[in-house]
Image (cartoon, rainbow, N blue to C red):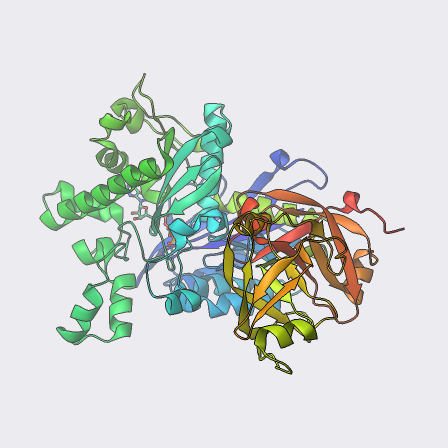
Length: 598
Ligand SMILES: Nc1ncnc2c1ncn2[C@@H]1O[C@H](COP(=O)(O)OP(=O)(O)O)[C@@H](O)[C@H]1O
Ligand SMILES: CC(=O)OP(=O)(O)O
Ligand SMILES: [Mg+2]
């Protein structure tokens, strides 16, 4: 399979063509073309092409868009034909995209909607999609997202301490450069001959955009960029961390509008704001000639990065390897040195000769720590394009993957009430008030709540789900059972013989009812999906949740088919916690694990 990859960054366009033999392992992947444009200005840009990345030549393109438009001709001239898919780096994918995704119209709409959260990136990424669409209208286009790798970050790392209404509106941290952090972490482990799952790694991606990432035991647990690629380290034109108190001051005291402030933080800050140049090569040259602004900028840059190393070593309880990548991380021995100086207290020290002698040809990942020190320090090229090609090739060769993904919903404790129960709890003839519709058609959560009393304790404010049923059923988790002091059996809905009795308390009175169960996990499935997946009512399947950070396969998941069902897997809060679920998750059906109903 031959895949063309576009990696549009905030200051550069990189592209590559990869051959991945069908059926063969990904190790046999071969790059057959490579090119890049950067240093855009009024007089054009620098251009490199060819596998050995020769010295840059000048090209006339003054913008990323113009450079993107030139790529098809470059490939044609190089005799690159028979491309089978085009893969794109997409910076912001929100919480939605956990891996390579085909860029269908709704997916593209979603990416477009995220543009305000990555104004320098998503438009450039979408531009490359547009160009590729026009030139190769029949080829599938895929996206690989910077944000995906960080979706394993725990809530304590992704949650801003801001009002609930803001958090409910979607304010949270995401993190970027995920494809790069993931690749370099794996590459470092490979180089060290260790299993990444046994390691605590910090990756510093220092390009035009820059971010630090803590990779604990193979998973990203924190990164320095937030809801947008503005937070964190000092960058080419972006500020990184600032005091949120600045905004009020800038608005009130300096009369700046929101758009002006945001533009300045994205485009006129960072190295550019500090020195007048966004390019570290210029800044280093000026500093060497005695320019004090450039010298201060370099100090701020290194100091910020060093602070993040300390923070992430603390977050992980130690550090085994530090990795430098991105244009600055790969090419600036003096910046690597400044960042690492002073970290000897944590066992991190560079060998200065090794640091100066770094040569990255042929995917090398040289180690540059002083001999005998505890923390390994490596430098490696980021290879985002290769990683993107690899993820897309894997996704494209996964059979029917799309059809077999099932959204997972976590059911918190709730009750279904009978007419009798409502009469006793709320008064004779009382009608519950439907408040929120549920995804299963005709079902709703009521505004009213009840309390549950058991011999050990009380659980207050338990949701009531309508419509009314013939029998009252109370669904709790195992943990809730301990809180109540009652031992509820795991049962399918409606199978209530011999279940324990619990006291329900409403405003008008009490009602003792049996029907206390832990709901057995199940999948509501509409007939069309069932047919497509080859399943019938009563089948049991295994569902793997691989994307949650505590990947788990749930066996014995009952399929319940009905015509109008919204296809969705239901698990309880204990199961969700065990699988480390936060936010939207999909489960994957393992085809070999279907147990037939009859
Ligand atoms: N030899 C070098 N010394 C110092 N900085 C360098 C060197 N080569 C490239 N850089 C810096 O790398 C940055 C660009 O990084 P890169 O990863 O290519 O950008 P992007 O984030 O757009 O992909 C620029 O600040 C550039 O000055
Ligand atoms: C997310 C980001 O900052 O990307 P880049 O380094 O390409 O600007
Ligand atoms: Mg970059």
